[in-house]
Length: 354
Image (cartoon, rainbow, N blue to C red; front, side, top):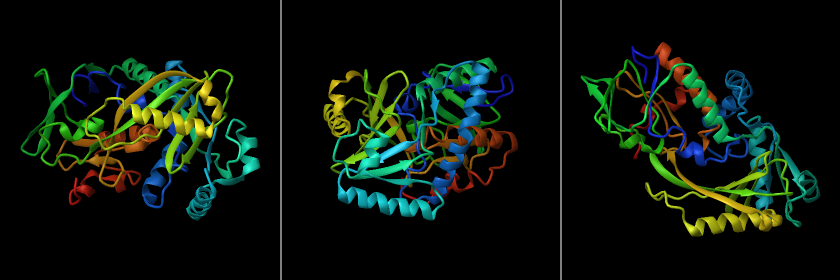
């Protein structure tokens, strides 16, 4: 929220405790690329391009390490059919001007010796990196507090819309906060906030990540694969922690950790990297990704004066942090959406089923 008394106020009971806390921190516009969504690819690539400067400014201001690593990503094929799919995907990537390199079985093991023997090959995306999402959120909270941003430790119950204009919000405790501009950025809960004439079509998509401590095992790069058709990723941190993820469930707002999902992630991660059987199990974390009907974010004017939307980032919330921050701040200041986010205008979904 932007109001007259303080430049900005954030209304959130626990900032940074949701999907941004559970995320693995992959910055993967290339290996997340599928056969649809060229506009989303362009947005992801633009945000990845902005990341180094964004992190440098943040670390300079806070004197905190945000955990950015330009390490690249390896996508391992499980079998010959999987390798053929990777070759097709690489051809599609190259048709869009995206850089990647096919690896033979021998080259794959040379790049990541901890991978299982016998994998037929893979794909190296040298420009897909990672960031420690928890360190990033901590640094961002430090930065905004130093800049005088106010915090209200409560949930928003409703956006207060009068005569077609958003005047602020009311919290669950009944506190009324007035604002010249309100930014709806409540993640998977964005649709649940009352007062929206046309609620944003965002749904919760349950995801679980595991954190292991690996001792002597070292992966140099983010490693991805599809084990018997099930995707899994492994994100190594410099402190010896390894984040394992890829579970995705349409389970409403149920955030309970599911034993079967934990088992499947451990099984598939160990299939790719056998030495993980000796890793220490540290944590299972569950959160809700904000998904939209077309799995692309909602960024821009809502159709209600004074209300801007920044939600629906689905699997790309951490990756899209720099571009979302830049473009939404500019929109608040100028009232005009740039060409960068125009394809993601929330009003594009007004005729789609939610």
